Amino acid sequence: MSRIAFLGPLGTFHEQALLTQPDLAEMDLVPTSSIAAALAAVDDGTVDYGFAAVENAIEGSVNVTVDTLAFERDLLIQREVVIRVQLALLALPGVGFGDVRRIVSFPVATAQCRKFLADKLPDAEIVAVNSTAEAARVVGEEGWDDAAAIGPLLAGELYGLDVLESDVEDHPENETRFALVARQGIPRPTGHDKTSIVCFQQADRPGSLLSILQEFAARAINLTKLESRPTKKGLGNYCFFMDFEGHVADELVADLLRDLRAKVADVRFLGSYPAAGEHGDAVRREADAAWRAANVWVSDLRRQITF
Image 1 (cartoon, rainbow, N blue to C red):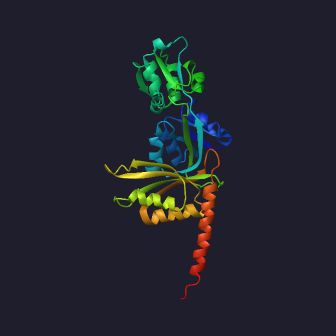
Image 2: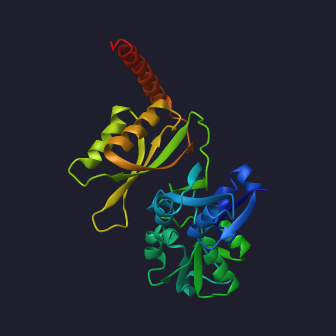
């Protein structure tokens, strides 16, 4: 049986998202103490797969995941999973709002509830832990009767907590994107795929980012995410995380990657994989067909060269 590592303990949103995938739910589930530990377990062969949050609709990228994939671990994304995140304020039975002096949660989750906390519990101390489920475990198992955890309802049920208030996130359209990663392998194209790369500029000069983006525009490839991150090599030294529609098996995407690598940037390939959500590949199919037709035309011209 394949083994899959994810941020534990049991009851995290990582586990909740993982269990939406029937094939992953049948694997041997291995909770870890942190996202970095889950990815390290894949890299060293302890497990076959890792499952980690990549991006939240409110707070943006989960930096520990994207930085680990870009700079520390040579892993490939196999799939993305997107779920709606619903957070609840959880406390021991009998504890009310007036008793809460501490809020315990994962920092990303706490940040998603800033307005709620400012309005309802402005004087509460924020206590950071490694996951939302760990917050529920600490409050429940250690008997913190002056504290409340922010986490999923599942965690509250697991650790014997009552719900003080549900849906405490500031924005109802709160979704988190997760990535399934492995040491090797690129899934075959499905027709609705996404590719992720990191571009490192070959030279810091005016227009360097524009030259990268022009390669996408020239091929009508839809860039779904663009984010700069420090390269860890000094102030002002940045790289660019990019997600875009298409698969490395597509001629158009292969041509893009070839030109990016040759002309404007060092490129780290993070994977081509099935995309979550609705299918929206019609524009890409048309652009790919146009590229193929143009390639045939150029090939016909080159065959006419006299040697």
